[in-house]
Image (cartoon, rainbow, N blue to C red; front, side, top):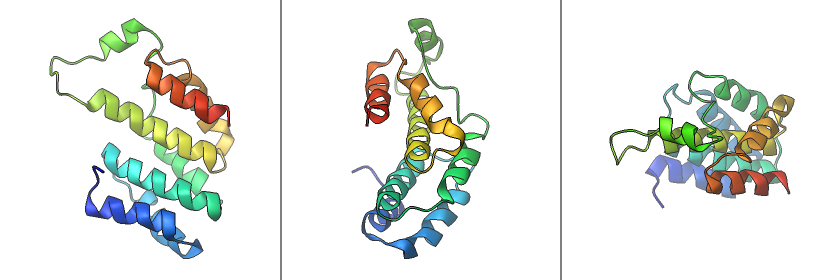
Amino acid sequence: MNMSELDALLVCLGNCGGAAAWPCLLHKLKTLPEEAEFSHVRALTMSIESLYARCPNGDVAPIVASILDREGYQGHVQLDVSDAQSALSENINENRVRDDTLRELHLARLLFHCGDHGQRGEVLLRQYAKDCRGHFARHANALLSR
């Protein structure tokens, strides 16, 4: 897996921990930097989603909703080819568009599975279900059909 040691430990904590893991994971979620890398968001969302399935915590959804309110954290859905083309960069190795999309999608998924504060997660997933990039649309549709 492509994870830092800290990210791997967070995922392990969510997969193996119990209620005692919540303070650590919620602290990491609350202190996620404004310009958080996708890999850190992925590790936290994977960890929290796993723990929440076994040990729900009502504090998760409002925190995730506040993260999605950050500038640049939403609005990465591409509904048609012109949206996709306008997001392209001259740099063929650039991953920012993909990372921003995945960050939003992972946070929407977490919100959807952890109380869905105001149905915001569902709304975002419904938008992604129409994304012209098939892999994102298929993922969103699979989550919504559960």
